[in-house]
Length: 175
Image (cartoon, rainbow, N blue to C red):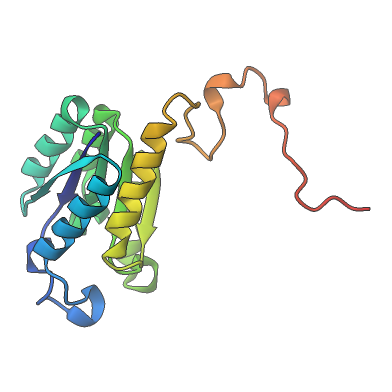
């Protein structure tokens, strides 16, 4: 399994930019962690970082034919880029959106994501460990790829013919 780890603008400054928010690990450290975690599962990663939106779009498009998963920290483009949203839609590749900081505890504009609607999972606020968690998720999903799609709300829509087919297990049955 090959996973693209894609980092957007300013992530090349990890370790020196706002270490109180993003930590002291460098992008090289993060990429090494990703490679180790992937190797533990027999997978490989290809890591890229760019400050240019069009280049990030091209990498996402390449993933359609060259990767079985995407770990994406689009940086500031998360909150502004319809082009990245559309590229992810085109790629049809399992994607995990990653944010080192908890974007929901920061400025209001960071709570909008054009990436999330095209992502299978979102990890925010776990620090650089989030990248490893994303790889774990993608590997497990790849191993279970014969199971129905759960991209929307966790329901296997490809197997539901009628809303009456949906049943929910009662986790707290009354006696």
